[in-house]
Image (cartoon, rainbow, N blue to C red; front, side):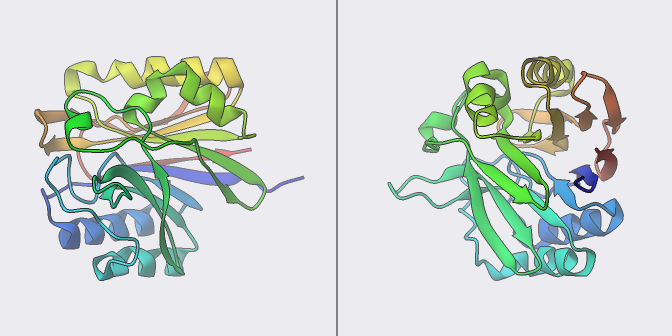
Length: 234
């Protein structure tokens, strides 16, 4: 039998454009989480700033995150704009462990003003930790049934996402997560931006959560920044 997997969802305080400060906050959250996998919100390393410079996987400013993962044995899934091949960046997920970082996923379904600034990704993605396959998503992806279906078709045990919603819309992710769990019988973990950020989000929702395959919420943060919650997937 495979080992249970401890997953945490974190919503660190974010400074606009300040990758150095945000990487340190991510490192603190990773150490506090005591989890094998730590999921962060959409564009958590820069804030939701459309003109933020893309973050390369080998950016030396990520060193605190790499060091924290090396100390804890964690895999961190952090949000950032990442370079694209067409000259326009993507909204991406960086997978970071003790050996460094790589671009693991590029958001496929862009919303609002995002298409004016970013290129969409072209394929769903899975990351693996021993015994577990985790499908990746970013925000609007989670509301597109085709995305969850195409990701689930890759063979996943959990669907994990970094998201950003306003406080008044905090229930949107719960609705989407329960639908994904019911349709595909998988765990769902959503790290939701807390505090304020660009793009018209002066009051982000927070309330990061983890749902069991039967739709039960098994871990939930409040709306405040710096919260980290975790659950054991088995």
